[in-house]
Image 1: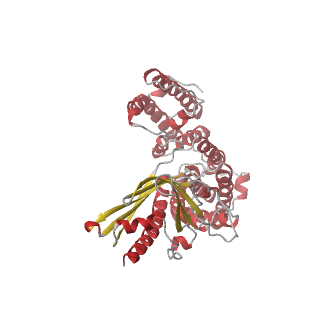
Image 2 (image 1 turned 180 degrees about the horizontal axis):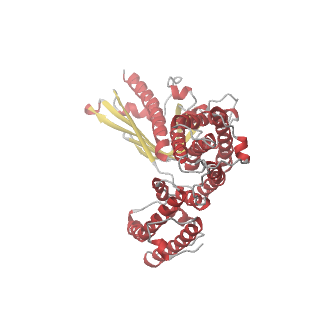
Image 3 (image 1 turned 30 degrees about the horizontal axis):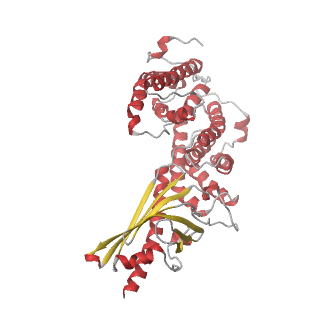
Length: 465
């Protein structure tokens, strides 16, 4: 290993893994201390390696406030030379491995870039050794002797091994660490798709369709495993399925592309072993530094053929609702049954009883008959899992979807003869990708709103008549 300063600006040629590791660690150290200096000296934001905030900063999990915009722009400007040098070094390293330059994309992905850097430091450069017949040398390894040569046999082993790894990793991430984040919903499906294909293509290249079929078969079998071992119920698995199949397909496609880059008997084994180490590492990192949960808002409305004064009476408390007809409630999602209130005005406590327990809602605004606003101090479980077992209780049923506040707003229409009734809920969930899970949670909350609002509408219009 002989690092040269010219490595930092020379585009041509290659670089070995030792020099790449040396420059990567050195540049990261310099960049870290430069950021510390800029933050502490110019912006009054000193921090050290022992502060959780610095990891959130580098993993792009910091909450960027308007008043800190100049601080983050300064750090971004200071990072540009390091991004340029990192791009040069990574392209040369990819060239030494014989990999496509398109793999450079992973250098720019937060968190993923750490694993990518590790892999580039792990694999030695290959000279593409050939035997006398012009074919790549094939070596017999312990792993190679276990993986069948046949298309079906290698796919079966790939699926089974990746499923077992996923179930163990999911148990660690959810039951032990309490994670329902990127590592579980993105990292594990991607790893399933990638590793099942690496095993499937260990002896010889496979078609894209075979790789995708192997990757998605692993996801399907893992879902059955989650139910078999009472780790999850049907509802949550159905919600996660679109994301899991899509990400696993991406992992399978990456595995297919790697067939042309990797020397299968050596590099596939290293990549597989690296995944065994990196996935639990990322889970632990995500557990130590969870991203901030965004606050979401859902508003639903109906028009009631009754004056606000009549509607208000049934908003504050309402009689028991009829059994639900909506499919999501029949599958186990919690649904409202009736509401009651203790006291009158601000300080009163409303209880909205659901199929899984009561929401406790202290009243904060009592503007009769216009606005009833409340906080939420107790949340019941969001659903009762549909499972072949008598009862299961995954960790995500406790506090991972929590309502923080709500309100009913009554707007008079047609001179007070009719009422626009709006229901709003502010909530957070601690599951990522947040935007994906928001699609499901928004729709569930909207359906709950309509069940209550339409019930209030029926009661109010019945009293009017």
